[in-house]
View 1 (cartoon, one colour):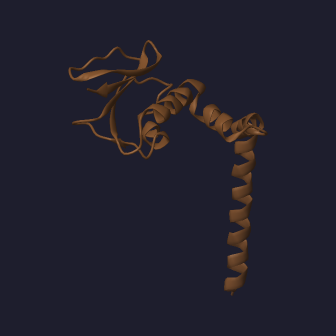
View 2 (cartoon, rainbow, N blue to C red; view 1 turned 180 degrees about the vertical axis):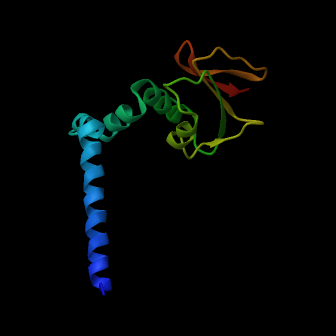
Length: 132
């Protein structure tokens, strides 16, 4: 009869083998290029590389312009450069409020709303509206 110890070792060895196989496969296919591009960069440069330079610049702009403790909502033309869910993460601790925000963040869109005025602009289609 095969002991539990032998079964455990066989399963453990198989698990380690497949773990190494998938790790090496990922590094060879795609991840090695990313690791090489990220090596030696500052934290800000790494964040810009991972999220995209255009999106990173916009989130840094919003974080600088919207004070902590106030609220925002987003009006955007969503494309490959803006990730709606990561935006909230990058400008935390500012909170999103869809109903009555203090600021409206406009990304790649021309947007206007009564009671709001342009507070700051990064470009013609990337700006922040502030409640009057």
